[in-house]
Image (cartoon, rainbow, N blue to C red; front, side, top):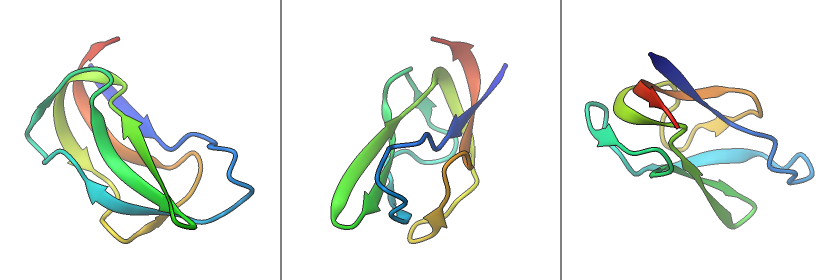
Length: 81
């Protein structure tokens, strides 16, 4: 089953969010809750966890790219939490 890592509303007063670092490479196994990506917003760093255990099969945003709430950032092929 495929699961999407979707950027949630982080309640940052509409500050732009930027992908600063992917912590896991495509093809790597992840566990539900593992940190996948670091985002920055006005000097604040936020980590997003994996929504499922499985394999990270695709990233849909690159480092230094500005991302929007609701945007799909990655796809995991695996099992639900």
